[in-house]
Image 1 (cartoon, rainbow, N blue to C red):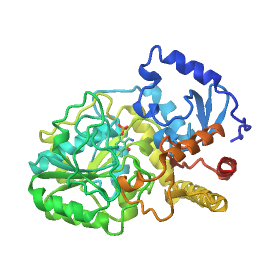
Image 2: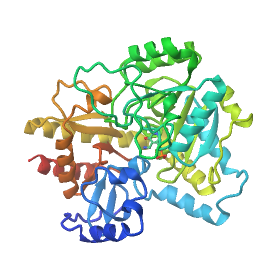
Image 3: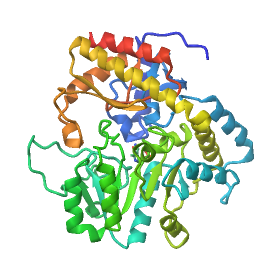
Image 4: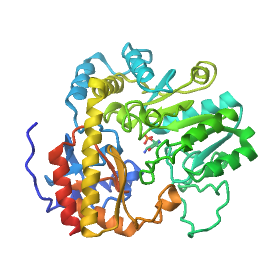
Length: 441
Ligand code: PMP
């Protein structure tokens, strides 16, 4: 691929004009609320190619938002685009089965340790709902454990305590936490079934299960926390969660919408060696095309054919399925060489960022994994293991850092998470580190 020449971002006038005009017809000028948050400059993009995005002013950005995770093969990946283009003439929707669905189902069953049966959906939010419904049907119980600072979609029952208030250090918070609704207009009765706990705290989970285990249908968790920082599970945490769930007949659900096909070919469950009962996938599964999956134990998943409703007009539409098959094929080719390459590029970036921070004596912390990591400003002594501890980092300084990076054409997500794709080569990494060096200077 020819490298586009580097344009130093100087002007954002065309983007600004577009956003002003868009606000006249699109509510808030965005079509997903996440895009209202943390964008230092309101941009409008014309196209993407590999690790780069181009905006209306012709500026080139090294992209680490990757559509909030999906474009694991970079923008406009040739193999996926070709497969989708070839499929277009065959139609889109059949209100019935299409042969390609079987190939996708088989890939998921082969790649994901917990997948015995699968269901395909369109978005992460939807398959999380399907997971909760089937877990409740299977157990005959209502309550669900979810964790502070984790996000599982925007629906009423689950948009709870993603970003609750930060407690004073050492404050004695109740267990479970008071569930916090996150949107105006949100109904509270579904949320009232949520038992909100701090993550990475096995004692908290044990105590709530000891008291209410017989009423708990599911434990829903990101296996690696990626919606608040990029926080690994403590040693043995997921294993003990698995044991508790099994002992109390609770369905363990890993929400792998971010970690799936990113932290490993078989997701975080493969990387950490802990197998949930159900798991949800989306994002990296189809390289940017809309598709999601709920996978899991056959005895639970079978209920979808026995009275548990999971529906969707667009589920397993031909283009999404073809894109998913092409993406998963690309990821698992040569024993997963592409994902290893992305991970290695991300690790070089992490090392480089840490070195720059050390050299300049800046308390910039870089934590996570090669393909998904977080930057934040906090002293080395701050142990970040859950939502509350992460929020003790210096948010204003992170905002300034991200705004300065944006002016250099470097684009992590608005909350300081960086996603790395298989298209982030040495040139993209070097360009990023040079820009960060200028920013820190
Ligand atoms: N679960 C997790 C862990 C997520 O990060 C997200 C989206 N960021 C969702 C669910 C919701 O997925 P979607 O935006 O596709 O509905």
